[in-house]
Image 1 (cartoon, rainbow, N blue to C red):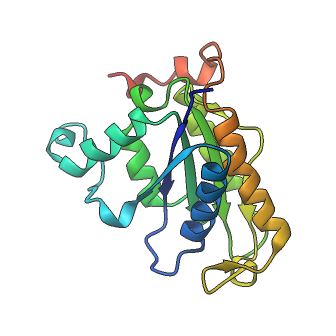
Image 2 (image 1 turned 90 degrees about the horizontal axis):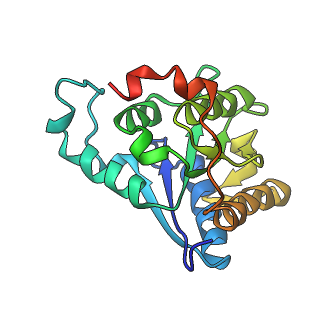
Image 3 (image 1 turned 135 degrees about the horizontal axis):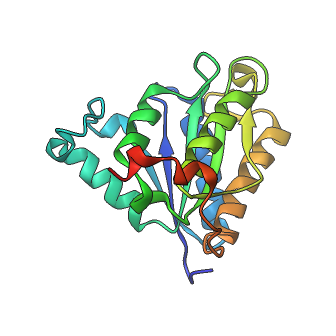
Length: 194
């Protein structure tokens, strides 16, 4: 593990009162308490147009964001669940990234849902990360029934809060895990290297 692992969290929610942001901040607080250095990449602060490989070099904010992801030792991806998957703003941010940002990097996943457990959003993110040869933590955090689990920016459900804090601790603990061999998904991911 690096002496002070640098963890960045990408918040895939644009809402002002975002439970996803609250959860990521909680995970980052735990990462710092575990000895890491933490940074929130709030996508409200980045101008990221829909990804177009013909013009991606014109998106200055994308270059800043991808540099921060590339330089991190570990990444937390947080999203609200929209229509059974992760948010379009997070998808756009990930589309600007590739193997340079994610290959052999430790990634932790967090998803928020107004209803029950947001399993499909987490599964979809896990598949994307595998296609980029990231090492995704087995532990993942979910905030189901978010309107009652978090009130006024504070967790009211201590069990859920502890699961989120554990994600922050584990992403620091495993920030420098040995790379795995390429996955079948990454070998088929020709769009990411063209």
